[in-house]
Structures are given as C-alpha cells and as structure tokens.
Image 1 (cartoon, one colour):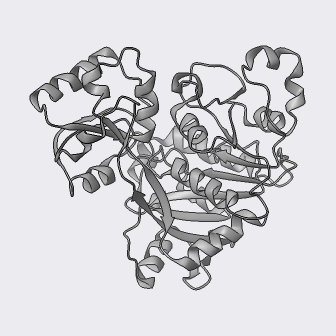
Image 2: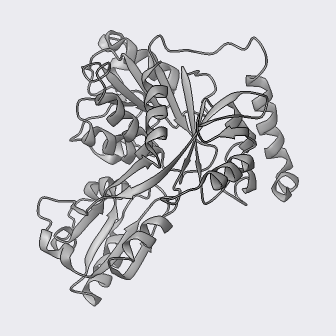
Length: 374
C-alpha cells in the first residue's frame, strides 16, 4: 500500500513494536480480577464509548455482576489533571476527559478512573488502600472507592504491557480496516492485522439489516475465514478462533444539556449542529431525516470550546432565531465546562443520546456470554 511506502519508517516501527510484544515468553501485567479491554486500530470513530456503556448495562443487568464492584479505567484524553484520578460525576471534562465523565454520569454506581499508566491504574483500582499515603495520595482528589471486582479498560488495545482476560476490537462497517491507510493518509494508528489478536471483533455502525452473505463478505475483508453466522465465530490470521459480531448505532430523543434548557425549542424543525468528534456523518444523516440543518460547526475530536467558537454559534443562532442547537453527548460535557455560557445558547442546547445495539438476538446472547463468563 502507498502509505507503507511513503511512511516506511513509521510502518516498520509498528512492525518492530508488534514483534517485540509478541515474542514468546514476553511477560505482561494481568489483573487478578476479570477484565475486558475495548479498543480499535483506528484513530477514533468506531464507537468505543457507546460500547463501554453497553458492556456496563449488560453486566449490571445480570445476576452475577449486578451487585458487584465494576470499574472502568481510561486514559482521560486531553485532561488537565495528572496521575490516577477517580472521576466524580460533578467534576469537569477538563479534569477527567469528556468520555470518562459521560460514563460516570450515566453509571454513578460504577467506579470510573483515569490514568495514563494503565498498570498503575489497574493496581489502584484493585487495591484502593494504596492511595492512603505517598505521592499517589497527594495527586488523587477522590480516594474513596471499593476494590474493583471487574475492570473494563477503555481504549487500551495499544497499551501492550497490560493483558486483559478478554480483548474486544471495534471496526467501522463503513471503513474496513484492511482497506484503510496509516495516519495521516488514513485513519489507522496501528497495523490493521493486529485485530487478529482480539478475542472478539465487533463491526459497528452497520446497516439495520444485514444478510449472511454480506456479513461473510465483510469478515473476509478482515482476514477472518470460515466465519459462521450461526456460531458468530471464524478463524483469524494465525489460526486464532475469533467471535465476530455486528452492531448498529441507535439514537435517542434529544435531551437538554442545562437545567435552563427550554424543552419547547426541540420542536423546532431547524437546528444548528455542533460536533467535535472523529466522524459525525451518521449523526448528520440521522438528524437530516427530522430537521433542516441550517448550520453545522465541525470541530476536532475532544475540542476545547473557546469564546471564538461560542461567538460563531451565537451569530448562527441570530440568523436562525427559531432554531435549536444539537450536539453530541461528549461535546455536551465539554460545553458544560465553558464559563458564562450565554442564555440564548444554553436555553436551546440539546444533546443527542447514542447507544450501540446488536443486529440479532443471537449476537446479543453471544456477547452477553463472552463478557459475563470471565
């Protein structure tokens, strides 16, 4: 591929790194409790946060894990805090990261933590008494939480020192990784062949209806052979048996971001769309079925909003005084950080909830068994 020629040094660094960690006898840190790693090989856009939420909903609804101590560990991308931090639902996205804060608000009974050092974070989640003294205690604001009995690692597939009990990799139906290219020519941040190391491959953002032939054709693009829609299993590169599941995005009804948001504005047929995510095309396609998108503001993933951004939104709103404003759940966390949000924006600012769901009951049951039986 042209990217592997033009980015030859980068490509070989990835190859050498992969060979180093796959060397027989290499030692890894393995949690003492059941653990699940959710990741991808692309730079965002596969729906990791909705998948983490689906895992939590599934675990909390089953008899074995409903009353147990479940934890989520993330890096907390672009946060301003340092070291290990337990996420507080009344905290700020700037301190914990937008995704981690979103998860904590939706699942207040789950321990959510951030730490760039996933091994350290994992140890502290299992042994919170280690925060009682020392340097770690000085950095951590919220130290009280129960010892984790199950840990979900958000976006840790590239953190090779850590070996979870089970690994799930997400790939986008609309962008098969085998046909993608390395950054900056494409969206790949890792070798696409690494998906063969996962126990589960979940194809996200699929059409609502998929026939067996379409599933099999897509799975072949991933280098997985002998895939059976009946068992949801195939054989990956290197001969590893892998579970392959297909899922789609499901949007909910818009929800006011602020307490002062006026619910009446959502009945407007005109909207201003504000998004700072890797790819907002599915969201735009969905919203265009119900609203006329008068103006769209697309920002980089995890964008920190500034007065210049708010001013642009204000100007668009004044040109469209009957429009409401719709944003993503992740962006809502960052917009809530903005000091002095003008009332004209706050009173008509809504977020669009998003969930991941599997295409069939069979896949839901296979998924449930995979994450519960660790």
